[in-house]
Amino acid sequence: PGIVEDADNAVVRIGVNCPPGNIFDCMGTGSGWVYDDDGHIITNNHVVTGGGAFTGGGDVIVTTHDGRNFPAAVVGTDPQTDLAVLQIEETGGLSPLPRASVDETSIGEPVVAIGHALDLGVSPSVTTGVVSAKERRIVEETVSISGAIQTDAAINPGNSGGPLLNMEGEVVGVNTAQIAGAEGIGFAISIETVSTVAAELLEHGEVRRGFVGIAYRDVTPGMAEDLGLAVENGVHIEDVNPGTPADEAGLQQGDVIVEAAGEEITTSSRLPLAIIGHSPGDTFEVTFYRDDEQMTVEFELAPLP
Image (cartoon, rainbow, N blue to C red; front, side, top):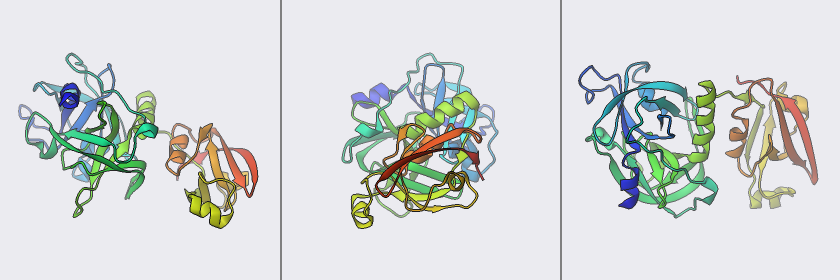
C-alpha cells in the first residue's frame, strides 16, 4: 500500500483528441508518470498517436490523481521504442518517480503495475506480479524494443505508458503491451531504454540514430563452447551488409562485439542503446574478438535506412 500511495501523485491519465469540456470522451486514452521536476511526463508513443487509430496532433490532456486537468505539449516521440515525452506547465502537487537500475532488477522480483486500465475512472488501477524475464525483444511493424521486461502483472488497454514499480517504489519499466490470447504475459520497456530515449527527446526532440550494418545475436555459454569463442557474453555478428560502415571497417561474420562507444556489450539489447545518441557522421568505436584476438576499430555511422 505504501508504494501505491507514494506513487499516487506521479501517475496520470492521458487523453488525446478530447472534445472541449469533455475530457472523458477522448479518441485515445492511456497512462503516464511524472519524470522530473520540470513537468515532463513519460508515456507510450502509441498513446499519443492512438496506435494508428488517428495521426495524433490533437489536444493532449493530462489528468492528475486529484482530478485536475492540464493541457500537455508533446516534447518528442520515438516510434521505434514506443516512447513519448510530454510536458505540462503546472507541477504543483506532483512528484517525480525515482528510477531503479535494470542491472539490479532480478527475475522473480515482485513488481506493481499502475495505470488507467480500461479508463475506468480518475483513480488508476493497481495490479501485482513478478519480473518473469528480462532482455526480451518486441518487434512489431515500426516498433523494435530491445531489453524489455516480461511480467505477469496484469496489463490491460489503458495501462500503456504507466510505470512498473519495484518494492522500493522505483520505476523499473514503462508498461507497453500485452499478448492477446496469452495469460500472464505482459511487457514493459526497461527504465534503461526509457532514460536513454528520454534524454535524446528532451535535448533534441527526436532520437538520432546512426547505422552500423550488421545482423547479430546474443552469445551464450553453450554457443561459446560450441563455436570455441573467446568470451561467453557479447554480441555475435551473424552477417555484415556490404558497403555499410561495419563492412568498410573490416568487421566480419563470426566476430564478437564486447564494447561499443565505451559501453560494455553483454547482450544484444545493449548495442542499440549504445548507438542511440550517435548521429550519422559520428565516430563510433567497437571492440571485438576475432578468434582469441581482441581488436578495436573506429568508423563513421551512416544514416539509418
